[in-house]
Length: 130
Image (tube, rainbow, N blue to C red):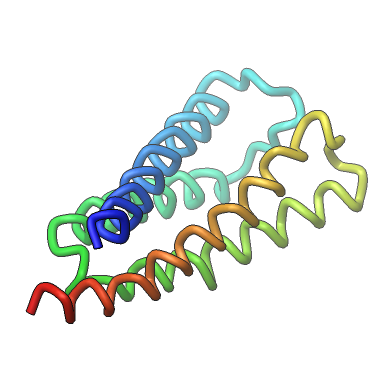
C-alpha cells in the first residue's frame, strides 16, 4: 500500500507543478507576447485564472488526499479530457504542428490515465488505513 500512497501523492504533486508551470507560461505569453502563435484576448486572462485556481485546488486536495479524492477524477475527466481534446483540435486543424504541441496531446493522455488510476487507488488505501 505504500506504492498506492506514493502514486496518489505523486499524482497531486505532478498536477500542482504542471498547472503552476502552465499558469506562469500563460501569463508570460500574455504579458510579454513571447510566442507569435499565442492568440491575445480577454480569454487568455480567464485561462490563466482558471489554471492558477486549479493549481490551488490540487494544493488544497493534497492536504487530505483520501477525503478529497474526487478532485482527482474531476481533474482527469472534465479538465484533462477537454484539454486533450483542445490539443487534438489545434493539431488536426493545423494551427500548430506535432513538433509544437504533440507532447501536450501525449501528456494529456498520460495524465488522464494517471489521475484516474490514483482515484481508484484511493478508496482501497483508505480501507487499509481504517
